[in-house]
Length: 493
Ligand code: NAD
Image 1: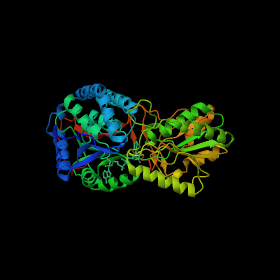
Image 2: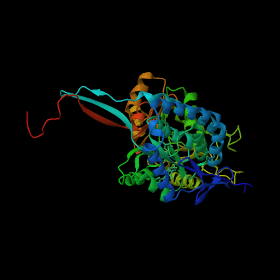
Image 3: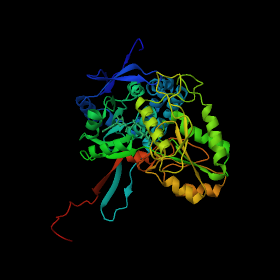
């Protein structure tokens, strides 16, 4: 056990508060308790929502011009860059993700704030050429109200930025619920919100469990918008909760994304894509390309090459610069992987490499990068989102067949296509039922490019221009410009 356990505070109405209840933070690299986080009670959630609601109407926030909101967001982006290493390292201790990845991802998160800072004063309504004389009709884009942003544990700073930045740019206020698995970076981020100069109550940061924190927040009558990233199972609860407040809801959910390798592909690039898609972030990525389809004529050679690369992956401490795959975030995930891999082997899948906890890492939550060859898509590992470094590879013969196989999933988040044939790339990407398609690349994102899914991956989009409109609602104003009073409604002209 570390000598000093770090105690974090929640951030409500501009104050850093102790909790009345706490939960423990466990470092997945060694299984030790390293921190205690406040577990928001029903009263805490209510206070946070009340503070956000009051900040909308009573505080200084409503008097900020859109340009001023943009400048504040830009300043927040600068502070994120200044503190990227510290925020990234907190994510690493909390989640086990590699420090080299969390530091650079956190620095890139600033670009999401800069992008929406620039958009803040570029959203506006219209004048309607109305079909009535003596009427001037215009629309304005107003903030929706209090936004509840709920994020999973695997990329706290990034997944919250895609919600916080457009919500604030559009003039909303927020209550952010950090994941109970890894909330440290967001609690630290509260200090940057404070330092940037957001008025009290505009951004509130809490954490806690589904019950009471998640339920009370998402069903609160003063919450007007819920922005959720997480699993489809939790999304179903949230949909039920929002039947209480009719909050606008966006859902960014799980995936089981296909990667297709045609025999005309640049094989080195394709293998790098497959490795990045599945072993980057230890496979704990919503867009992990974990269903890999390889054309029959090159199947054995490509599998041999992937296996060789997997065997050479350096497993280790997430702070070590040489480490390529770190621990998983929880022991539950290890058990889940072991169960599904065992079932898949019983169903006929062939384990090529991995499939168990590596030797010499008894105290951390490590799992070997794994490659399974599956005869078809009925195998458990092909159907189940594992959120772990596990590939299920299958062979295909024709383009038509692989399109059908790729689409045969309840999910539709990402997809990768590796081919040197431009016409084929266009043809296939058009037929793939997923929100993002990467051709001869994988897992690239940008604040400028919309991201989201089809089917059980949720139909919402984050990032890109249009998202800012999801954080506004249209008000229509009718003005009678006649110099005569409004006419008697019971006298027809
Ligand atoms: P999860 O659904 O268990 O939890 C996500 C968040 O929801 C957590 O903060 C949790 O406390 C909260 N929550 C749980 N029950 C709730 C309830 N009843 N009401 C309100 N809030 C509740 O997900 P996880 O295990 O943390 O993350 C993994 C999942 O997230 C995977 O399915 C992954 O694919 C998905 N994910 C999706 C994206 C995307 O952009 N599409 C990105 C990252 C992760």
